Image 1 (cartoon, helix red, strand yellow):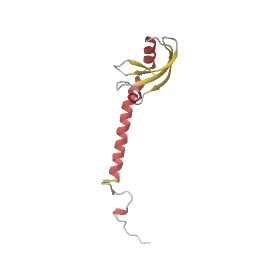
Image 2 (tube, rainbow, N blue to C red):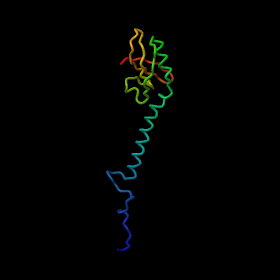
Image 3 (cartoon, rainbow, N blue to C red):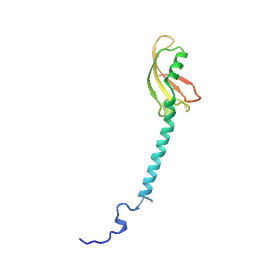
Image 4 (cartoon, rainbow, N blue to C red):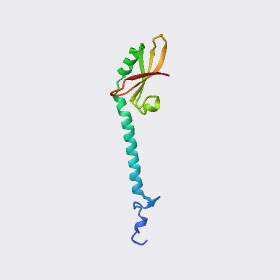
Amino acid sequence: MSLRAIPQRELPMTRRWVGGYTRIGVNIKIVGVVVVLALVVAINTLPGYAVKEEVAVHALETNGFTNVVIKERAVAFVSLRGGSKQDAARFTAEANNPRGDRVTVYVFSGWLFKGATIRSL
């Protein structure tokens, strides 16, 4: 076994061209894409946590619903779940409607300047 110098092209951590980019360049691009996606998800979901359940309960009670129970809260991609672009949270609630029937409804609410919207299932 001889002790010869290993040529640069055989080292495992060197910059090799793969599809026009170096491995290091590809890793940097992947990290960049992951960071951008994480920011998009954070910007989309964080305002939903600022909306209180009382907003949904108040909207339902104002419209004649009684015995309101909030079952679920959704804050991720609310506009893709039936809400508008300004909505930050979707609450799934069970309540008695003004006729006295037990119903399940969605209450969509914005964070700062938008009120609540009640939608039936």
